[in-house]
Amino acid sequence: MTQAVKSTNQEHINNPDTLQTYYHPLPFVLESGESLPELRITYHTFGKLNAKADNIVWVTHALTANSDPTQWWPGLVGDNELVNPEDHFIICANILGSCYGTTGPRDFNPENGERYLTNFPDFTIRDIVRAHELLRRHLGIEKIYLGLGGSMGGQQLMEWAIESPELFENLCILATGAQSTPWGIAFRAAQRMAMEADPSFFSSSPNGGKKGAEAARAMAMISYRTREAFNSSQQDDNETKDNFRADSYQRYQGLKLSQRFDARTYYILSKAMDTHNVGRGRGSVAKALSLVKARTLVLGIQGDLLFANEEQEHLASHIPGAQLEIIPSHYGHDGFLIEAPAISKSLDQFLKQ
Image 1: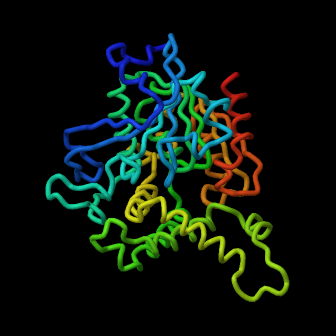
Image 2: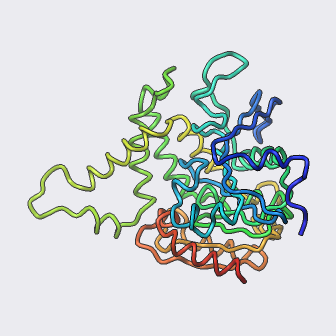
C-alpha cells in the first residue's frame, strides 16, 4: 500500500478530537473564474493514525451538516460504531460556503471589510473538492482507506475519486447520483424562490433571510421523506379542522433549521448542488465514472424521491467493479441518515470482502 501520510506532517494528524482550522493565505480560484482572497477550512479529526497509516476514513458531509459526523450519523460513525476512533483516523471538513467555520457568506471579505452575504461568489461541487484537496495536502495524506458520504457528500466523493483516482482504496457513496437531475434542481429552485421572497434575505443583517429559510426547509422536507412516512406519522383524528399535525411538523422543521443554519449559506450550497455533473468537461458521465479506481459500494435508499434508485443503478453500472445495494426504508432520502445500522452492516460486509 502507498504510504498514507508524509512523515513530515505527522504533527497535524495527532491533534485532539476538537474543531481545528487550516488557513490558506493565497487566492482560491473557483471554477467560475472568480476567486476568494483567502480560504479558511475548519475540520474535525477523531482517533489516531495507526502504525501502517492505513486506517484513514474521510467523511464528506451533506447540505446542512457539519464536520462532526458523530453528531449526525449515530449508528455508523462514533464510539463503538463501525467507523470509530478506536480503529480509525476519521477526518471530516466543513465544506466551502459553510456557516460552521469554513469560509462562507457570513464571513468578511478582506478586500472591502464587509460581509459577503448574498455577494458570496457561486461555486461548484468541484470547488468544494479542491478545498478538500488543500486540506489533504496540508495534512500530508497520500492514501485514504475509506471515503464515506451521502447525498451532497456522495457528490463530493465521486468528483474526488475521479480527479484523484489513486487516492481512495474504498468508497461508500449513498443516496446520490452522477449528476443533478432537473427534478432535484426544481426542488432546490423552489426553495431559493422562497428565500428570495423574504426581503430580509437581501439586507445587510448577518441574520437575514430566516423566514425564507424556514419555508425553504419545509419544502425540502417533502423531498427528504415519503408520502407514506408523512401519512403514517402525521395523521389527525376525524374532528380536526385546523392546526394539523403535518402543518405543525413542517413549521417546526423550518424553525429548527433557521435557528442553527444561515440562510445565505443554505442558498449558495443549494446552487452548488445544482452544478453537480461528473461528465462536465470529461466527455460524458460514463467516461468520467470509468476513471474511478477505488473499490466502490453504492447504496440507494428505497423510496428516495430526491435521488431515485435508478441513479444509484446508473452509478454502479459505470463505476468499474462497483457493488450496488438498495437499503429498505420508509423514510425516503433521509434514510441515508436514519437507517445507519443497516448501512453499517452492508458496509462492514463490503469492507471484509
